[in-house]
Image (cartoon, rainbow, N blue to C red; front, top):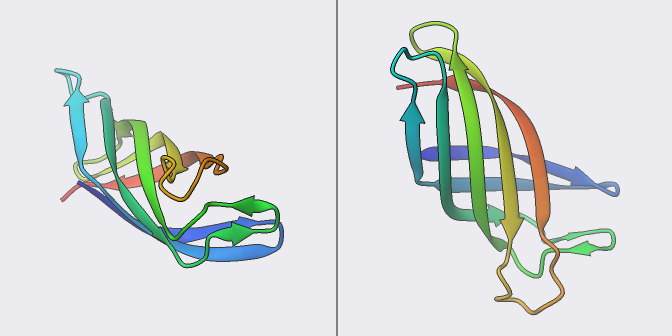
Length: 107
């Protein structure tokens, strides 16, 4: 399960975003890397950024990521995350694609 909170910034506007995404995770047998993917939901504090309009505050979230453990509980990784309303607010939402470097802490 991936829970996240952060900020989106674009065209001079900022929004808070929180997401909750169940993940399917796979790891190499030697523990040198992990791969995960999932789908869930996100809430934006605002849905308009200049000319970009997400249509509404709720967004579907699709993600895929790879990680490399550095220590017992810590690691680093790369994540691709796509936000979209999947058409629930109308046909004009292009969504957003995010490429992120991440610090990983495993419970």
